[in-house]
Structures are given as structure tokens and as C-alpha cells.
Image (tube, rainbow, N blue to C red; front, side, top):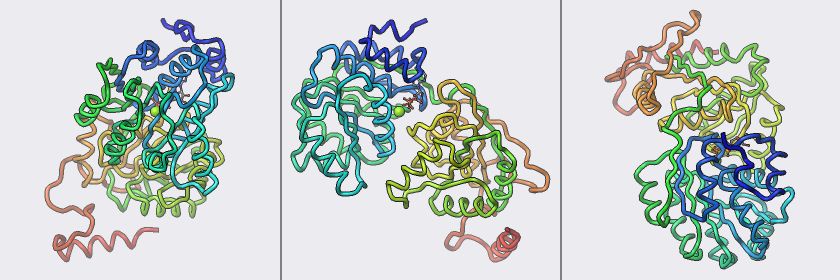
Amino acid sequence: MISFKDFNFHPDIDESIDAMGFTKPTPVQVSTIPIILENKDLIACAQTGTGKTAAFLLPVLQKIVEEDDFEGTKLLVIVPTRELAMQIDQHLQGFTYFIPVSTVAVFGGGAGDVWDQQKSAIASGVNIIIATPGRLISLINLDYLRAENLRTLVLDEADRMLDMGFYDDIIRIITKLPKKRQTLMFSATMPPKIRQLAKKILTSPEEVNISIAKPAEGVLQGAYLVHDEQKPALIMDLLRDKPELKSILVFSATKLNVKQLYRQLKAQGFSCNAIHSDLEQHERVTVLNDFKNRKFQILVATDIVSRGIDIESIDLVINYDVPSDAEDYVHRVGRTARAEMTGVALTFINSRDVRSFKNIETLIDSEVHKLPLPPHIGQGPEYTVSRGYTSDYPKRKGAPKKGFRKDRKKVRKDQP
Ligand code: ADP
Ligand code: MG
């Protein structure tokens, strides 16, 4: 068994690892840290929650400390979202407690003084920059970035960044960096477009592949076949009287749904809050921090928090809607059972989503247990891919027959 001592880190780094409460490296850390210490390029694929952040931060910090060179920007980490930038920055604060490196997290959406702080940190050659692509490009356009001392570039959640359309930005940023550098790519999945990007920007990379796309062990997964009209009753049923579950994440497909569900839960007296893209950045930060600090029990969220954001020990994840992207399912379920704890993930499947859920089962290579609905909720849909229209289809131009529409309205009226 390998321990952190085997990496021969500087005592200050070992001390910060202790302070973080890490006792042994995770598998992705075991495989990638030696490669990074050898200054090789790397592409690493491992699912959410496997400890990728420390896997790149620790060896990079070790090299900075070893060379005792704190001049200029050494490390640039590009991440898809501001939440992730802040989270990595927090990790970094922990690891650099005993080390005199300067760091800055750079992302859009803050007030003017934040922008000024970011600008002056970058212009002064801060040692470590964690940035979202858009904001970094703005700074580059203003000619603030001083990259001549850069030794390492990290692309974190690379798959997510490509999904969000950051390919061109990434390439543009890279043209501003020294050619002689180490480049590390981390991704939860390895679709062909990630391989193409790797080919373009990495030099004879080592490859580490820890995950096949499977939720972490220790997650109990279940699913309910349930019509849209039955979902509110089912979720109330699942959430009621569960004080033993300290942190519950509920994901819904759209911010409209998130807001609506939040209002319903609030009205029923649940301790809850919601996060979606309509919130200002400081509001999002507050909500996430309050959730982390267990100031409320249930967080209803759109996709924005499903990937990469590190909230420890979620007891229960509910997918109120099936995520349309099968990989998102893995990310969301990865919110529970992080770092070897246990958690439960439940998914609501309406007849429209059966096909997507079957895709998920194919991706994770296992069948998720279908749980029976509580009797008072009634009969749910079948687990078969539906042809034609069912009551779960949204209104579509020219499609539904009159009789069907009436039927649908009647069901709706019965709702609380
Ligand atoms: P990923 O980037 O792979 O999704 P993170 O780097 O965010 O995962 O780590 C997930 C969680 O596991 C964090 O709370 C982190 O502090 C914790 N963690 C990471 N490495 C270890 C370790 N070696 N021992 C214990 N906890 C760890
Ligand atoms: Mg990560």
C-alpha cells in the first residue's frame, strides 16, 4: 500500500496533507502524482469525487517548493465554472497554509473591486491562477497575463469545458503560454473530442484511466417510474420526517422547475433552498456555503452544481428529472459517497425519460433497481420506451388529441 510519505513531499506539504485530514492517497493520486513529479504531460480520466484536485495541486506545489522559486506565474488551472474555481482555490488555501505561494481565482460575475483585485494579482505575476476561460481571455486581451515563467497548465473537467463550448477559448489561451511547459488534462469522461484536444495540446502524454463511467462504490442507486403529476407527492413522501439525512441534493431539469419545486417544498415547511443561474454570484456562494455548513437540509439545483463542486457527505441525491446527458447522471450520483462514504441516489423516471434512463444503465453497465411507488401515489408508467404520445409528453404543436388534453388538465387540477 502506498502512503503520502512515498511521494517524498517537502515536510510543509506533508504537514498540510495531515492538516487536511488525508490519511492515504486515492487511486487517481497514486497513479498521477509520480507522473506529474516527472514533468510529463498527462491525460487522466477519473470520475467525480476521486481526488483529482489534490492529484495535480500537490506535485505542482512540491516542484515550486523544491526549486524555492516563487517568481512569477508558475501554474495556470483552467476550469469550466466559477464554483469550481472557488472550490479549487479553497483546496489550495488548505495546501498552501505553510507555503508562501500567492494564488488568485479568476472568474466573471463579481463586482468591480473583485475585477480590480483579479487584474492586479495577474499583472503582478501571482504564482497560481485558477480561472474560467471567459474571464481569463478578457485579462489576456487587456495584456495583463505574465506567463513567461509558467511551467504547468492544468485543464480540469476538460469534458465539461468542451460541452460548454470553450474549445476556441482554450486554444487561444494556450497560444499565449510558453511552448515549453507541462500540460495536464483531467476529465471525468473520455469522449473522442477530448482525445482530439489532448492530441493537439499534449506532448507524448502518459495516460491514466481510473474510471469506467460508474458511480463510486457505496452509492445505493434506485429509481421510481412516476408520471410528472405524481412527482410532487412522491418527493414529499421521500423527504418527510428524515432528520437523519443532513444534506439532500435535488436536481431538476430547468431553473423553472427548480424554482417551482423549491416553492412547493418551502410551502410544506421543509428546510430548503435553491440554486440556479438566475442567482447573482454572491447569492450562489452564500447558498452553497450555507448548504455545506448544514444551515438547511435540502438544496434544489439545476445542473450547475452537479459537476465538480465539492460538497462533502451528501446523504441523498434525488434526480427529480432524468438528466438528459447520461454522463451527468454519473456526475450527480457522484455527489454522494465521495471519498468512500455511503450515499443514496434516487431518480424519478417518467415515460418520456425511459429511453434516456436506459442509456444511463448502458453507460454505467448495470441495472438500477426500480422501486415500487407508495400505494397512495397510484400507478406509474411502464419501463418501456414509449412510442407515440403519453400523458408525460409536454404540449407540442399539432400533436395531442383533444381528449388527451382534457384528461391531462383533469389530473393537473388535483394537484395541491
Ligand atoms: P474530483 O476532482 O476528482 O471530483 P476532488 O478533488 O474534489 O475530486 O476531491 C473530492 C473530495 O475528496 C474532497 O472533499 C477532497 O478533500 C477529498 N479527498 C481528496 N483526496 C483525498 C484523500 N487522499 N483522502 C481523503 N479525502 C480526500
Ligand atoms: Mg475535480
